[in-house]
Length: 264
Image (cartoon, rainbow, N blue to C red; front, side, top):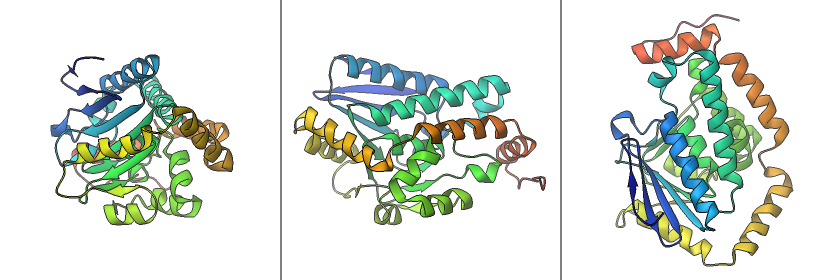
C-alpha cells in the first residue's frame, strides 16, 4: 500500500507505520455499506500480510464518524442477504479487535449503531469534543448486530452497557471519556487525524511482541469478546432482523415518523 487508494465510498492513505482508512460518505453520515466493509477487510488483509503496525479509522467531514449500517441499502436486501451482511460485519469487527495491528478510531462526529461498534473494535479511541455515541437499535426493534453486545460491556461494564443499549440514549463526548468508552478527547488546535496518528505512534514505538502480550493478558482477565456471547448475539440477530417490529422500526425511521410497535 504505497499509494493512496480512493473509491466513491472510502479512501486509504498510506503512512509509514500502516494506513489511514477513511469512510467517504459524508452525505450519508458515513453509513456502512457492503463496499465499505469489504474495503476495510482488504485493507486489513494487506496491512497484516506485510506486518504493518498501525491503522487509523475515521470518517469524512465533521458531522459523523459513522452512523451505522446504511438502512437504505438494508431495505433493498432480502432477509438472507441482510443476515449475511450482518455476519460479515460482525466477523470483520471481531477480527479487527483481535488483530496484532494497533488500531485507533478517530471519532470526528456521531458514532451510532454499527459506527460505534466499529469504534469499539479499535484498540484505542480518540474523539472530537462534539462527538456523540449511541447504540439506538432498540428504537428500531433491533439489537446491536456487529458484536456491540460484547464490546460495550467489556469497555464500560455490564450494568452501564445494559442501560445504554436498553434506552438507546445518546452519550456526549465528555461522558464517553468519563465511563471509559473513549480514551482521549481531542484538542481544538490540532486536526483530529493528526492527534489520532500521534496517539497510535505513542503505542507502536514499543515492541510489537510486548504489546501483543499485554493485550492477550488483558483479554484473559475476562473482558474479551467471548465466543459464547457472539453465538447468542448471532441467534438474536437472526430472530429479530425480519421480525414485524424490526420491519416497522426501519420503515418508520426511513419515513421519518414514530414507529407503531406490537406488544409481543
